[in-house]
Length: 124
Image (cartoon, rainbow, N blue to C red; front, side):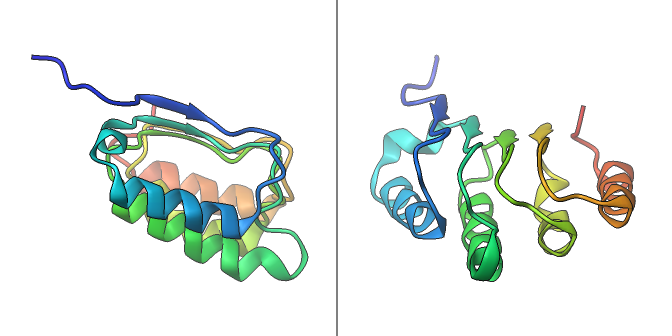
């Protein structure tokens, strides 16, 4: 039997911030069809810039913990920096695919990514 429901959701470049992630989480929690979601593309939105970094991290963490079936995650061009990457490292380890290009990741962040990959049994 195949499961029904949404498999892929692309919300790239829609002007969303961390509040939008919170609304997205709430909709996932209220809709059984969203539990089958495997791929989530959130690129080109400002989740981590300026004063939003801590709020963005918190909402992404909750989103991933509440939706363990999301195996592909794109946070391309979201102002993700080293500190946010470090805070999300544990939650990134259980994904299969991460898209993190065009962010504020320095050599420190690359070292964090190396640890994420080393500690992951699912990243491809």
